[in-house]
Image (cartoon, rainbow, N blue to C red; front, side):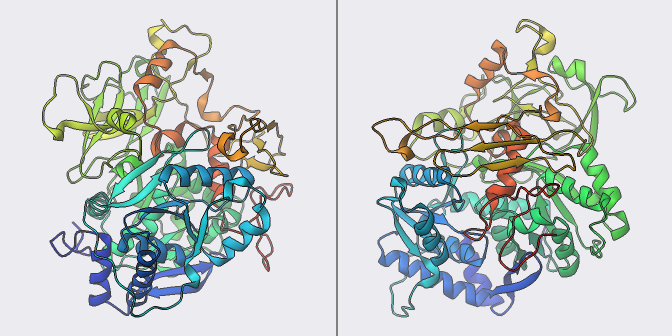
Length: 621
């Protein structure tokens, strides 16, 4: 159990309470530091400075009539996002973080989210406002929106201060979709935030000497929880960098961890693969001592055993402890973390029979047996969170070792989707057949397939996209469950796809980070519907890569069984949505989509340098 976080008492029931306590107990200690280009500290906040800035913004939001309502948070990576996010929490404003648009289709998504959240107010920075006016002033999607630059607020020492929020008040609207359909806002309360960070601190204790180093996008739940919320709760410094600084040169992340003594850092599996690739190319020579790195959380997409092994081997000379690799599983509908592997032992891998897995049973076999698949444990739930593996069609609980849909119960489960009572009831308040009764027996349906073995969770695939062999029939019992394939990171093959949105004027490349020559297939978007504004009808089409993602083998979603799972699993979440997208689209979203704002305007097409995106004054490396 960590000793860093304050106890949940009547005095600390929300994150604003935690910040207020930090500003009193450790006012001059550094809370957040932003690294320019991922290397040099350029901006910093102490707890006293942060508390004063947050109070100023909360008072401004109250004066603007936003208290009790909602607002879109449109910020590049930086400390102004931290000030605005906590200012919204102080001021009882439900903030909805959104990626800063760089293309016209992203402006459409911004408007859809604002409409869904029931607001016309967009909180942002002066630079972002000028950039939107310069590039997208002709778009109807921006009509009627009010942009408030929080970095240019005037001091008002006598302004009224809003009443502190209650634990059950809405703290955040976390939007989980919208790239291929209407975005859904997960209603996250202050109590949800506090419960999740308490459980995270219990699973991966920060301790007084803890330090967070994060490149993850702050508008994403994983980046927000690890980069902002957990450090505030634990009272430890957090070093933040823009995502594109990592994408341009992955070694920057490791160099910052070594330089600033990072103990906690999180990333999707592909980020660790990029670091391994950089090491094999001799680009990590400046990485120093990584022995203080205690928790390397690994989530947001399926975790590969080959990735874990290769990363540990590549950075063993730098002092990286294999026990620090901590695979986990989470989703926005559960605030974030649901399960995680402990930091005091190496990750667990279970070799299972692929034939038995097709039958829905996890049968352990030897590593050298034929037709085997290594599945990495996502750890166990801690605190009051409970898991149940359920048959998604019959809703009956399944025993350990049987594959079914992952259901989650506990204080971290959010209240539902904003303005969607029917879907919320189906997704957030499901009941196991034969166990109807108290409200405690309701569960969140994640839409992901998995099983329990030795009290730990193993992900097998997503039930929102179960894949079956194309030549098989739906009646074939061997094809009931999809079998993903383990792969060696970065096999050489053609890995490139791109898409172009309407009126965009340029394409955004979806690039596999390999040394091979790119080969692209362009997919034009549909034209706007006649008689309607483009933002109200346009939905970007998903990337269709010319080459098959390597982990899908030869599986296609064609069976009646897959249709049953689609109907039975309404949740499209952090875990399931990312895990089931084509990997080219996933990396494109994490790389080019998580830019640092107006200065990042696209993906370079330089041969052999995928994802290189320059900012003024910096040469690509």
